Image (cartoon, rainbow, N blue to C red; front, side, top):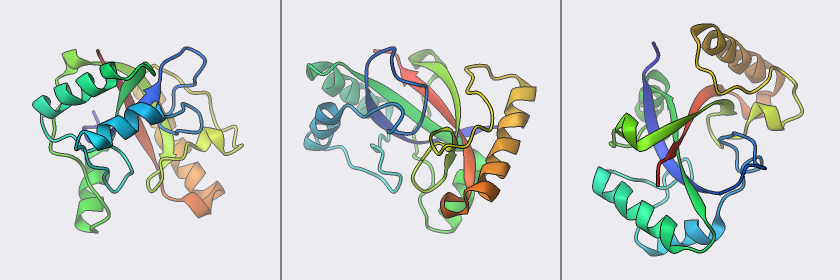
Length: 170
């Protein structure tokens, strides 16, 4: 089983009209909530996500999200630990230090994104496979193959990685 490391959190618009995605083009950012988080002292990391280093900070981020009338959803984005460790070794931004307890989040599924900007391969006009909220071993293997194919088909955004998308329960 692949171990995932949290690379940061984002605040996205609440609604059923948005596709599951790590990509803000598919699932738009809740801009007012994001700005409120930055104003509350949260920092943006190398992935342009909000850095949260502890459960207490996550609780504070929940308070910020709930205080904004926009109705934001807090999304935790994670990449395979091995990829995060490799990026840390290259000084390209690794994982945060937080471990999010499983009872605090709901799994939304996986996306295949470029590692540098979290642009989804599914939003780049490449019909590689359908998104799914399942996490079977076969589907995960297929997602890894899709990441390899996307790296070949879209070299300007290469390399691609499987990104786990979870929503923090408010």
